[in-house]
Length: 175
Image 1 (cartoon, rainbow, N blue to C red):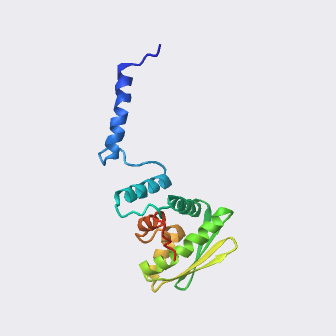
Image 2: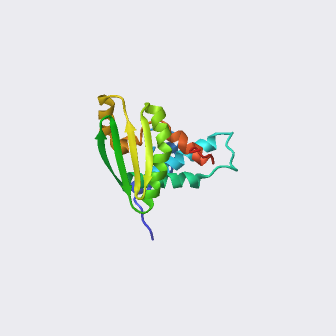
Image 3: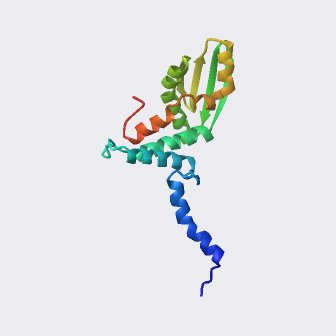
């Protein structure tokens, strides 16, 4: 026969209530899991709460593919930074799937980065990644770009969440 202590029973009995409470914006845990899963969860909640969502166009798999690219870019590439006068040249290299990820994401990010910062930004795909060039107007901006490096620069702009929502809604934000 299975025996369970009163303390164990009470602890286990509170789990569903705690999970329900956490789900409804309480003081309980809010993280829904690994970061890509959490990003998808957040978008699914937004889509579900929006009565204007066109479910015939929703494509969460496209968002998952984009998040895989973000993971590959962040964890499976190497970036070197050099400066030439007021231009920062960043060479980003990857292998395998990371090459396509870095090419897709840097190419998509360049217009947003230029619009957000006023920098002159261009990118050239290479066989194993990209070369990103950022021309700035001052030594202060040069220090900012070199200090941030490639990975910091890729986070500039509060567009990522809206971008993820566009992808999940079936739109192509890279057009």
